[in-house]
Image 1 (cartoon, helix red, strand yellow):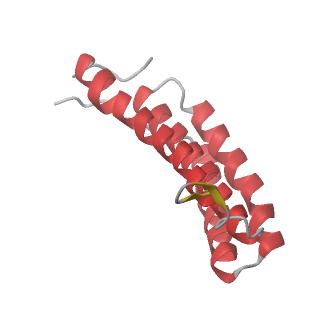
Image 2 (cartoon, rainbow, N blue to C red):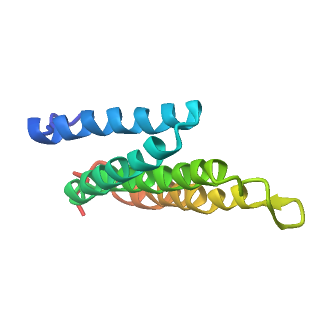
Length: 131
């Protein structure tokens, strides 16, 4: 068993906590159909997620999970915008609508995590997770 500790500087932790506030405000706005506020909340939510991913880039586990969060927020934001702008139910092709395009970044996030859990982590088992 390893005694290594991963600690987060307080200023980074404060940013992560603020990120949660923006994310919740974005999703509450989506739920309540507050279009301008919901769209405005995309920017701080996504920007902070990108900064968090960048700051954790030296730890493979952290960067993979944080980049997956970035693409999740992007997918979620696109889906929200498609509903706000009423093109979510427009037919793209066959039975697929424009809302279904959100699956692309969702799948990218799953592929990033699959890479980490199925390829990187088994090959680096027991090692400190730096890149």
